[in-house]
Image (cartoon, rainbow, N blue to C red):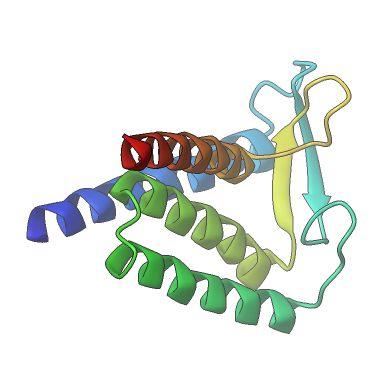
Length: 141
């Protein structure tokens, strides 16, 4: 279990660092600002359709972290999935607490502008679907 906690901590820190560093270089420093794929925007909302004040975001994030920890410890979700959830939550929470908005900068075609934390969320969704599929398949046999 200690090995799993160490791996989880290291991966969470690496993913969180990649999110915060990418926001710094591509949003704050406008690295590659001449590219069509980099469009710095600030996002005041939780998503494109849900607006919330900072207090609500902090409460939701703390509740989410407790739920993720419960799932990791009690339900034994995969440590990689847990690391992604923690990094995604803390990355966007740090922006909201210190800046009052989230720094988005990746712009691809008709998609709304997003950041590395949003990519982590999508990877998490794919991993959950894959793990559920294989878990259910293994249980059936």
